Image 1: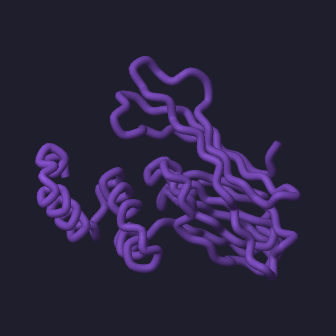
Image 2: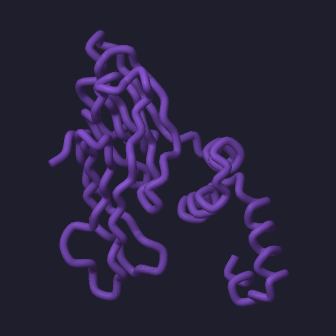
Length: 189
């Protein structure tokens, strides 16, 4: 049971082939949840995608809010979740971490679609406004590192998508591993 859902292809690190994932969001008496599961049997040689079930937080002024639409960025591995009250949530599919949440419309967004030129989402609200949300590749890694204070997520996203902004994180991780005499791991960085 879910309010919004989407399919995506995602390549887990270490797997030879992409996995087919199904993400869906639900709002129940216990709160909101985003679920990400692998559909079918993993391709030969692949490790199964670990199921995700993460809490979807709703602000105090939107306690009756619920998911109405979902799209995914295949390129970035990000789930875009839209709610009835006009909030957007961005989740990293690999970790289930919420990357961003903000209100983008005071009116219900009643239709959405993938926006291929930006690998984002485009939607129309009840007043007829066309809204577009996408990942700013130049800013997402510094945002995750400095605002969210999640350098591990920033590093994973940078590696997975070949994004700039994580150079210092690579150096820090290398030095930490090297100083702990984990030379093989340091060499991988």
